[in-house]
Length: 177
Image 1 (cartoon, rainbow, N blue to C red):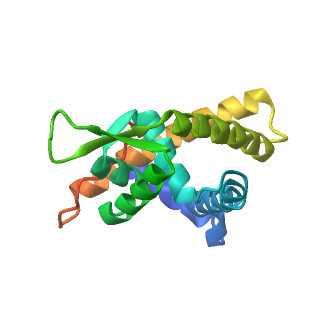
Image 2 (cartoon, one colour):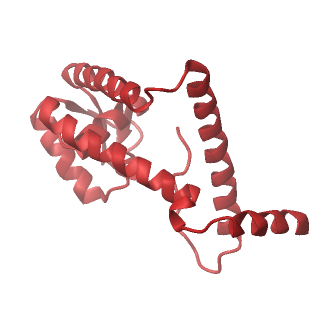
């Protein structure tokens, strides 16, 4: 363990500017990607980015109660409720009875919602291609594998930090379903 701490210390001494930190570079890239999406999605698809995120979450979950969708989106239940109401009025989301809880409904994409998700995913793929322009196929695969490893390492590190934190945290949704 001492050897690892020394290696970490040695690596951090090489940084002369916070912009050199991986976490800062990743934040900048994520922010730029979000700004690109915020320019394109509303203009091309008449959706806010949060509405798009809601549809995308329902696409990979299939069906889910509102609370679970809100947790995946990182928004409050009340905010998600308004989003779902608007998306339902536009016939992009449907509500189904929840067989496990009669007090809540299961949300799912309507056929129109599924079609819209496919169109936006195709458009998103084109944006991703533009962002990865200049990388070879092998470099893209390496980047994907490295990002998956960094995510797994970060998730493990987060878990360790939570074990040693003196106060309680609400349950975090850190993994993909």
